Image (cartoon, rainbow, N blue to C red; front, side, top):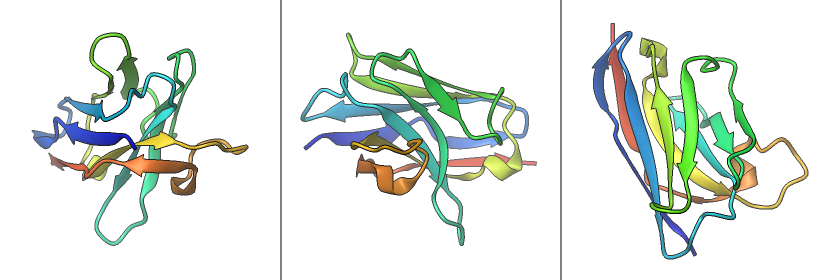
Length: 126
């Protein structure tokens, strides 16, 4: 089983940037698709972005497209990053990374991912 730990969250003003990291241990994630999700109080966990094992393919939720960038470093750090720019108050949430299982879907639902980190809080003030 792979263990995932997110970091990099914090408090930032609207328009600012943060870079989240998702570090894996216990097993390499170099062959896994990795996704980022977020959850605000009272709301369901929602898809933010994913990156395939090679990094060749990515996808983003419409709400973050053009502002967030997902990347990965398989060789050195077994880490996936989420660069978040032009942050808005509505981006406030706990952000989670997860490794995907096998799916015939679009890999944008919680059910398509099996190992999850504990989350990191991102708060964007207006």
